Length: 156
Image (cartoon, rainbow, N blue to C red):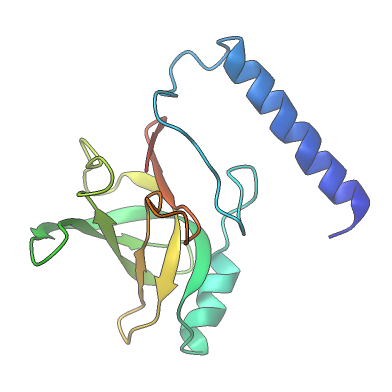
């Protein structure tokens, strides 16, 4: 990353933080701590290309940020840690399972088929397109924090 690009991202981050502190984003919910993951920032573009490459190369344990449309709501996984599960489709057509730990983060409320959602988490390869998990903060601080952004609210 060149210095100019880094300076631009830092400046944008400062503007957003300043605006938030003065109440410009009145509709957004800032009640939860927002800590962007180490390899991504809410100001960066979603990493659709990197997830497509990870799928083609059968890679896992990759921090990604994607935006997609909800195509199916699935029953919660209740074995071990509880997870809210749903499928999304990226613009590329690739589908992903999202496994959002609802023992560590709030459930994404009101989620419905055809809704747009943005997710930052860890990608794990599988034959069906892959899974994104770690969409929450790490209570031990050893793993990059993830999040889900939906209808102006950040779930982590």
